[in-house]
Image (cartoon, rainbow, N blue to C red; front, side):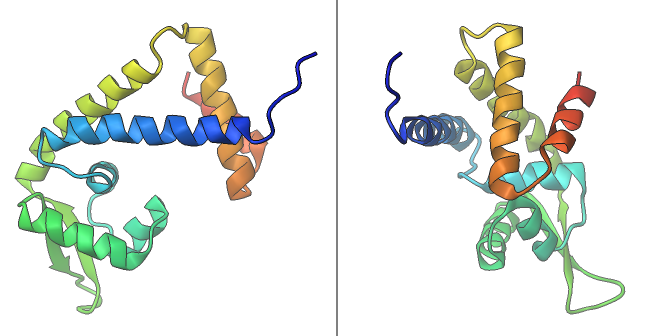
Length: 156
C-alpha cells in the first residue's frame, strides 16, 4: 500500500480553495466586483437589512473588514445604509435596485466557476465531494456532523 504524504490533503484542499477563489474573482471583476464583495451581496439577497455585525458574523470576517467593503459597495451604488428605527447608532444594510440587478451576474459567475471546478465529476462524485467538504467544515468549525449530513440530504 502506498504511503500517503503527510499534509498532502490539506495542501490540495488549500490549493483548490485558492484556485477556485481566483477563478471566481476574475469572473466577478468583469462585473465590477472584488473578492469578498460577492458574499455580502449574496447574503443580503438572502436576508436584506442585516447589520454590519450580523454580516461579519455570518461571513466569518472581522467587523472592520465588513465596514470597509460595505462602504465600497455603497460608493458603487450597490448598497444603502439606513439607521435602525429602534437604535439610531445601529445601521442596517440594504441592496439598492442596482445591487439587486447585479445578483444574477454574481450567481452566474458562481455557477460557471463551480461548473469549471467540477468538470469531469459525475453526479454521484459531486454529491460525495459535497458531503466530504461539509464534514471537513463541520470538523473545523466544531459543528455536529449528523446535522451537516441532514442538511445535505434535505437539498436533494
